[in-house]
Image (cartoon, rainbow, N blue to C red; front, side, top):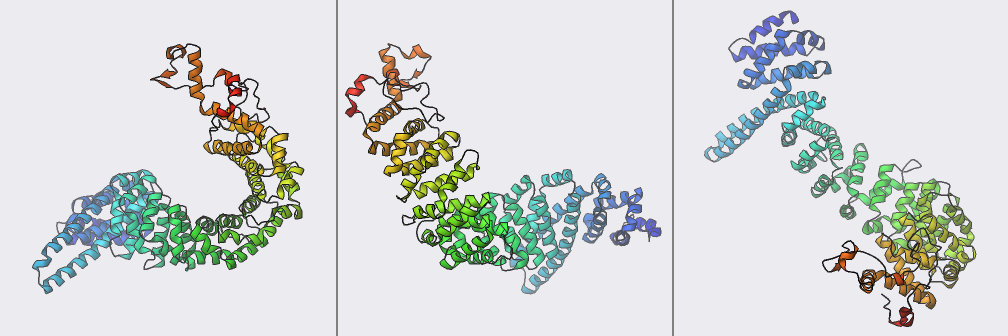
Length: 616
């Protein structure tokens, strides 16, 4: 009763430890009733005496220490009392208790190990029994201490102070103990701390992956779920993910997919791991692929749950996984589901599967017409992007794209999406790639030529000049178009695309430069007149610095005459020989594909020695 509080406090002034333990035990009964807390904490004598005894006397008895920490724990459960606890430095004193107990525990273990060889069997058993009792009490004390600290850590400034006192390694060390309540509390505390990068880094350095993986699965569902949630927070760090994989996380998590209560968290963790390319092949040797495929095919809602399908999307990028995922039965079921549900993410997974050469890609061949029909009908832009990408992956030479273009009126569809401002860039990009795939069928060339699609692509190249990916893909599509006489005639005789390809030899993007160079090689192969001018321009590009040096010699200029462009015997500037400059004012602007190559300004000596110019 609160009426006896004064007598309980008087016991704390006694010299005998037993009296102090009795007094704190009676106070503990008072604080168990939340209605008493406000009156108790408002009593200055109460807080003063309790904190003094805790600071000065508690080390003498573990029972006394446990009673006092439980008193503080009762107050720490309410935010209202946190300022008072902070004022009396309860957090600091509790941290010191934890540090002390951990040192005591380490010392006891070292001492027991050192004496093990000197003790008889009976003495050793007695010591082990005594150590077990002590450990049980210590677990109880550590549990309540960490609980107080967890409650006080709701204040971020207090949590930062704990971090400086190395609370993270302490908690990870707790994971070596056996008390279920202490283990669960340590994991919960680590989960709270893990949302901050600094704490996460401390956990990684302290070897958290190896400490927690043994609890997956744990002895209780509650512990397993707590560890999974901690792992999920930590999994955003690539190093921790790698450590978890090394510790065998993948097969453990796959096993949890069979248990519905853990499935959603296990899927998220497997998705995080699947983002690392080096880990994707590890899924091949587990039950993950058949389980995931079954879950995708039989998902009860129209759209497959995002985490599940995202995991499947990532796994499908690995060739070995793709072989296991895209069996004829699975592929038939997945495509049937796609035609029914029109799920964009399911289409993305199928698109990733279709990119792998060999049997996997060949299995898609019989579904190309159905996919084209769905592509023609859909109004969903996300689905359209994936379907076009899937069709664009069908690079097998026996696909009758010319018939598909006719049967599904794809030319009208392509014109619609390539019209200026009609579609988003991601759709335009996939349309361009799809056209490039269609050109693999020679019968498509006259269709594209007669329906002005080549000219549309040429105009698009100028319109999207700032988009490197679109420019690159149009260049590659033209590279394929040049293989066929009908589309080659349109490109060489009805556009100025060759001039534009020459411009692209100066592009900052390495891949664009390479593709432009290869495309110009094809032009040279089929058109001797263009070949002469292209060789000339390539000579100028590849020998620009040498030509500049020749020009400077002809003008009698030394290195010092031009702002120090020539230093240390090497030419640092970049320029062209004036007599070899072709349309110098505008030739190298990617935005000007309509400019013509002309040889009017070419010096006569190269007209005479045309055959001596190196094709390189």
